[in-house]
Amino acid sequence: MKKFINKVDDVLVESLSGFALAHSDLVSLNLDPNFITRKQKATNKVAIISGGGSGHEPLHAGYIGYGMLDAACPGHVFTSPTPDQMLAAAEAVHAEKGILFIIKNYAGDVMNFEMAAEILPFESATVLTSDDCAVVNSTYTTGRRGVAGTVIVEKCVGSLAETGADLQACKTLGDKVNQRTSSIGVALTSCTVPAAGRPTFDISENELEMGVGIHGEPGRRRETMREADAIVQDMVQAILEDFAAKNLATPNTEALLLVNGLGATPLMELYLIYNAAARLFSEHGIKITRSLVGNYTTALDMAGTSLTLCLLDDEIKQHWDSPVHAAALRWGM
Image (cartoon, rainbow, N blue to C red; front, top):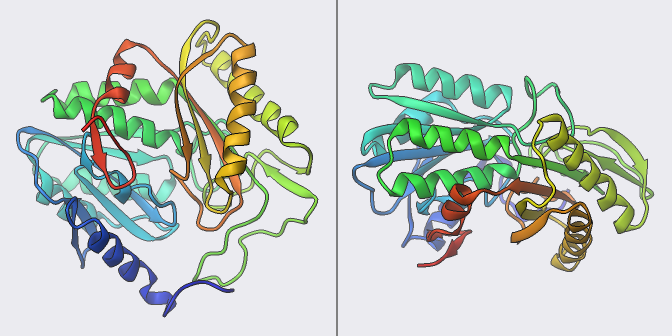
């Protein structure tokens, strides 16, 4: 294993410290327990908190700031944060209108956030993201996994919270965005968790994993490597079938297309994938009117990509387009 690390046990704290130092105008870091908050605490709004295992950067700390999150709770690599982190973060950012947790659907995250919510001395609600259409169940989840679509949920809900909307309205929008979002990932290589020191799974040079999870969980099937257009065709088809199963009609619908890198895929290839995906969705009558390309929900050093499509309506467009100022996402300010 070759990585830029000092001691494996110190990776998380040193990384969090570097992030907080690099973005000291936006965030503040608390250690023991670990959580990150906005530099300037917001007032009189629903406080939006997310979190999960580290290794998916810039998710979630990169989305702390105006128009998105108030705080994030980072666990160790691919490991859920603990309830005491969530409680401390909630107490630090509570702004008189309750706490909304945005949680990816992984067993440890769900259990620990639920424990924290039960202890909180103020009102809270939860949005559970479950946009991964690759599998229905895995050893990590009960039902669908939450992946890159979480970014879209956090952006839209964060925008609504800035308007002073109440807790139930923020939850309702988050649930709607999640329902109208579908993702699927593909991996060309595994990732290497520093503490493990070796790739999570073995895959040959002429294979790919279709439907891989963001922790290296196996996907729908192991396939033979082929041209990018053929790979993207299968990914687009899986998303279209998912929307059909949800009884969400797609023809003549506006959509946001997110082409996400899993950590080690060059931007040149991600834009090539975007070109193929946008063309294929267009052929099915879907109008791509919003887009995002880059590393937004990674899996450490995995070579791969995911496609996320969110079906837009006027409300979602309004909150996607609204100003945001975070380390990893900013426009309109």
